[in-house]
Image (cartoon, rainbow, N blue to C red):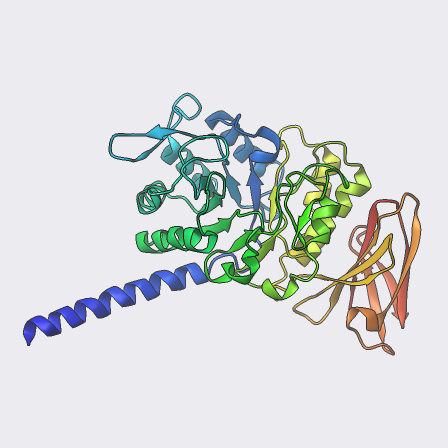
Length: 398
């Protein structure tokens, strides 16, 4: 009897610890994660020196104060596995080791993210986590990792839901809360299953720093070709609104603001659209060479506040007239963020009714322009504005 009671008590304790560990994960990413990822600009050419320099610039340029908190190293940090199966960092790139680098990041009151892959190899051909999920999770926990981007290269006929659940279970088992970023590219419609597994999930293949470049090939309505511009990625977010919310975010990929040949208005449009989508805001630019113009865009506190609104609603397209669109996002205080988007090659007047963005039609509302940072006045029934080509006007209606 005593032995049975002991076994029962032990089982209750273990189950309680698991529930507590799960509850810690449930508190993560209640607003879309904000940070920086090395991939868009540096690919696999990363180093300890680069990451430390980026961390220092985060503080110096006010990015931390603007809400960006995760420093994520993507593919290219790994070297091999030792005879015990432990993942080993490339000591030429990271001579002090990953743990020491994480301690440096934490000393600046920032958080650290790392990259791995659900397959046997990463996209860059380095060791993936397949067959080493629990071992890698223990390693990440011992280093102090806060965020894991988990890719989908070299996975053959693996089941995506099963593969990602396996790593999520491993993360819970080791007990360190880690934001889990599912980078499966949208091929298995992760929005239908990933909310119980990860905190964010990619909805498309990779973004490129362009307006609408790339050939968009679809299968069952989803992208099957890599590398397209942000407007083509935007189009694939329509209809996914109901799957997003606190702790669970559709991820249309990292930001390309400041990269490539995007114009000033295109950079503003890209950033504004990601904000109204409640998308994770993971910068992908070279922080060292960033212009003041780009810095001003990504640190606009009023636009960032729309993204970080605690209600956690993903914005939706309310009106589509070909080259002109109206998007809106409900905010926690009952106000609306509304974005007028001009896809055309000329500036254009865009108009909308209150009822088209979920507001009572016959009331008067104040309108504030979030990029001009000024009040526009009180309006009845509707609002209109001249929008630059490939640009946006973003307002708050209250």
